Image 1 (cartoon, rainbow, N blue to C red):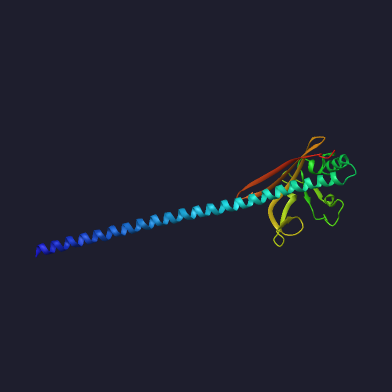
Image 2: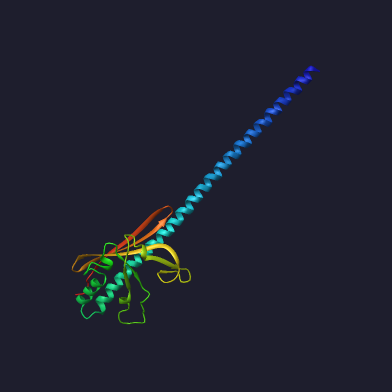
Length: 205
């Protein structure tokens, strides 16, 4: 009888140990699973943040390139439509402020607004481009608006895009002018910017 009781007690102890070990395994498995899920979520969160940053930077690059193209088009308009190429080149440089060190040639640069440009004007439509001096080193008064209906960036209608565009010009020599177009924007808790530049020449003699 005593042997049977001892065997029964031993069986209960083994069963009890077996149950306890299973519970520990379960807790460890849940912990590993939880850590794995948290790691995956952290990676996904970082990936989403990186995708958002890449998107913002691509848009900024296009806007900076657009700034250079507008000023180049302004140069082409003056040079091609003026009575003499030299007069057109001089008129362009005067317009952007190189002659008087104002507007785009000032320390803070300028921004442009194309609201007055009418392409039905077949003479010199680009000369209607409005150039306004920037009030700060990051051209805070030149903040671009985004119109979700047209997908365009400008200054007339739309919501804040978070981007600011600044144009700077610099005289290299009598027949060469450097144009820089910088886009500023906030990214997370910091600030970022991208700059495109090109050297424009008096290419018609």
